[in-house]
Image (cartoon, rainbow, N blue to C red; front, side):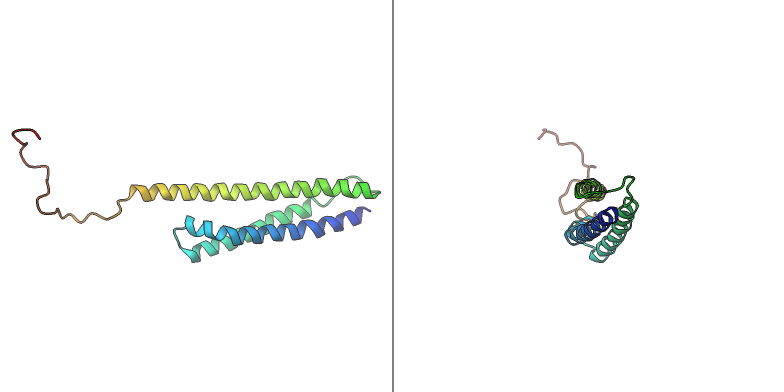
Amino acid sequence: MTVTTYLIYLLIAVPLTIWVARTLSRNGRIFLVDVFHGNEDFADAVNRLLVVGFYLVNLGFVTLFLRTDSAVVDARGVFEELSVKLGIVMLVLGGLHLVNVWIFNAIRRRSRIEEMTNPPVPPNNVLPAGALTGTEPPARFGY
């Protein structure tokens, strides 16, 4: 029964990891394009790198977490072992997703702040006719 548990675990965990990676890649592209100011080529490249890293980390974790210390002897043991293993895998997948979102949101927030500090139009050192330069004498009667 232990080998059956391993097979069921892999048959669920590997497709689950692939599904999550594809979903995050497809739906996260829009977010990455915004983070990288519309540079779609750069966003797509980062998206692919994130997917590769996601696969490496999660499939590595799935395979390392395959082993069990106790022998599984009945159907109840199969379900108990699978619930623990798959639950932990899903928590790790969710945790890594939240870390990625937090990091890219921080990058996005920083780029928004930088955009707000730059003037919308670059200065051209030309004053319109009749503009005050700051060198005029003060007005005699106030306002």
